[in-house]
Image (cartoon, rainbow, N blue to C red):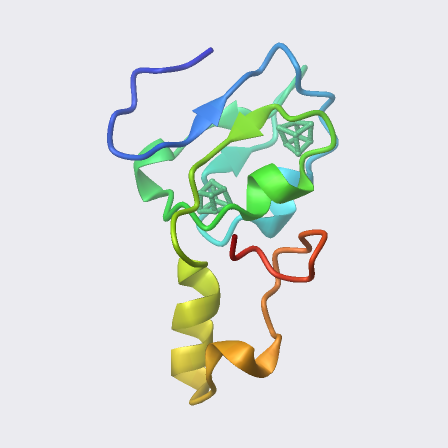
Length: 100
Ligand code: SF4
Ligand code: SF4
């Protein structure tokens, strides 16, 4: 397990990764990149702890404490002039929102 990035709560377990690439598709900041056997954690400091990658990983290879709300959804809502109740969160979490 990588644990050398102290900026965020993001933790990646490459030994669990099945290379489905979902995290590379949902991450708004390109924190993960396609790799040969498993994805690579290429920009850990860019993580904003939205939780989308962990919510979409089928094998719990990613852990992150997403805090009190989804920063990506809040920023997106603010940019569009909408509030957080508009249900436009894009993380694909089970409840339709990555906010926990
Ligand atoms: S928590 Fe969000 S920003 Fe951080 S790596 Fe996962 S999808 Fe990307
Ligand atoms: S979502 Fe999980 S299993 Fe899929 S590529 Fe990312 S870390 Fe690996």
